[in-house]
Amino acid sequence: RTEFLLATIGNCVGVGNVWRFPYLAYKNGGGGFLIPYFAALALVGVPVFLLELALGQRFQKGATLALAKLNPRFRGVGLAGTGMAFATLAYYNVILAWTMVYMGQSLRPGPPWKRVDAERFWKHQVLNESDGFKDDFGVLASPELFLALVAAWLALFFATRKGVHSAGQVAWVAATLPYVVLTMLVIRGCTLPGAMAGLRYYLKPRTDRLAVGRTWLDAANQIIYSLGVGTGQMVAYGSYNDASEDVVLDAFGVALLNSFTSLFAGVAVFAMLGHKAKRDGVGVADVVDSGEGLAFVAYPDGLATLPAAGLWCFLFFAMLFMLALDSSMAMLEAWTTMLRDFGFEGVGKDERWRGFRRQDLVVGASCAAGFLCSLGFVMRPGIFWFALVDRYVVWAVFVVAGVECLGVAWCYGGDKLSADLRRETGRGVPRPVLFCWKFLTPFLCCLLGIASMVRLFTGDERYEGARAPAGAQAVGFFLMVGPVAVMLLGALDRRPSADAPGVELATTGKGFV
Image (cartoon, rainbow, N blue to C red; front, side, top):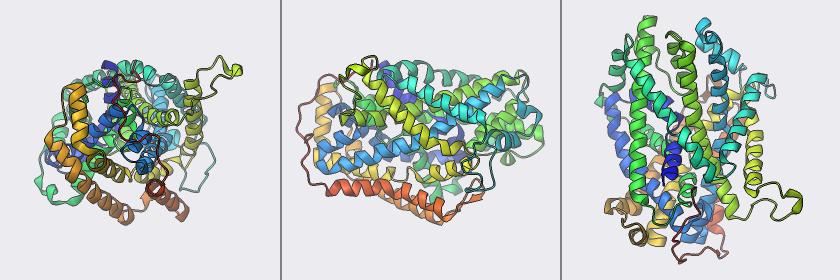
């Protein structure tokens, strides 16, 4: 059970907790942002998170076949979610490459961003970015970044080559070390001059933002993104549990810990940004940034002023590496679980391959395919494509999450699933969660999906400052509607499923260790 919990925590607690949540909280009303944030957690995040873990544990299958047991026409929903996981993995793993470059640079006497402008180092030495989407596409940003990408995929392969068995073992380090480093950063940051000014900016409630629809959408997006729901990851992890695992308690505990980590990370981030603002003689608002700008420019620039700057920078980027690796492991596991469920287990009994484990071949082939897909992100215009894919690739999670709730509540029966869990674990699904599955969560997912679509089509067409050409916008549109098309095609499939409802409840899982 410990390995399952650590792996699940590691998946949920990712780089978004460090580089996205603090900025969203600051931008959307500081402490006031916690109202829509925890509302989204209670009404969307926890219900879907619990549902997916319960589905995997109940049917002992990945998302595609588990949903097919609800109704054969739901196969497309599982395929769409798992496909989004792999598409996300292809660009997300580039974050590991960036952190590895910075970890290597941190070991040099005096980090280079201490001697030159941190933003210039990021844009011109690490990314070596071009002027737009089309400029120098096909030209590597640098050999160092390319080698780091190779190392990142190798690290992911060795971390997952034995499936959840190795993932659980890696999680002992990857899920716990970030908390150690984060605690060190909080303690050190809060002792720096200007730290309190940064924390006031972070947590001071501004309730006027509650009347802005985008605040509520940002809160829901952060919850969905952070918990990793709608992409098959939690179904895959749940499928390796014993049927007696108290998945209800696990779901509530992990979801709350994830939110606490976001709040805790914000203290570390804004304490350092407050110190940086005081050092530069500017307001905190002038140094606040989100995403890559926070993680690779603002924060390391602040760390560079500390004694033993190289050590602090190394610890920070090692933490980001572990956070990203955990999340990548879950996305890859969702994909490979689907492949194994469909019988793609490698070479079977072919004597020529006796020395290879079938799992190695499934994971290795998936990593090789992901590596090829991620090469475009280490080209000179790679950061522009990274920003575009990041904006579009998981829009359909709202659709997947809503349909999953409807499928469980109305096809299989929410009360029936609750009874299954109560019989095997001693704890059923709380009544408010059942109500959310039937009515509230699907309705909110529909609203959020529409609002997110409107925001995508009416928002800025620039990505990291570059205007997207028609071809790039077409790629984004395909990433957005592709999963929906897969779901619709699955709904039209009238073939009966071998995985129909009514199977006996498993008493033992596939095993997490």
